[in-house]
Image 1 (cartoon, rainbow, N blue to C red):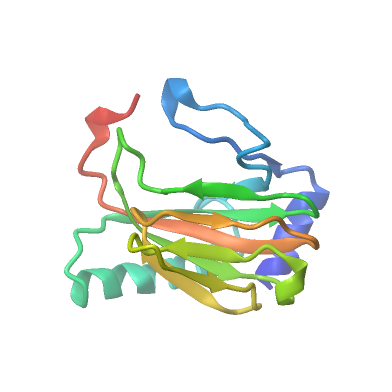
Image 2: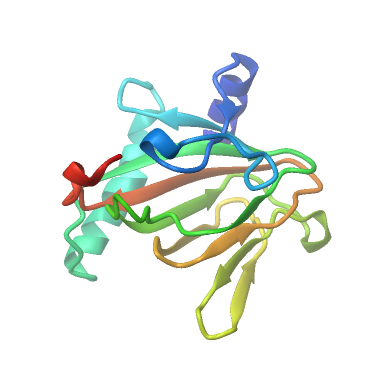
Length: 172
């Protein structure tokens, strides 16, 4: 259902080239990040309830089991076409560190040789590779470096962040 929603939005022209950076430093650098995204908000009915249920459940787990001060979530659909990638980065912005957890729900599957693999870097020289499998949910610390390897076929996901919003004055 979410994939149909995302494809429908793409057909309506609601996706746009993704950017990197924040505030005055926000810009497009396709050699660093070349996916297309469409942000989702509560007015996006009727499917928003599915997204709200998913991330609402994650919010509750983060609060009750991880004792994180999460307040809300934000999310977007992401599409990586053949040749798209997102180089190594962190989702927690240096000047606005409100993103605590990153969640990626794969909406499509790719074989390992079809690229689009999520690589998580653990800081000790080790990494984990997670190949896109439809229905798989990956949750990790937003401060963890990661990348999406070059896709050789279309890769669809719903990507979101659980936020604490403690640092609103730091947005630049």
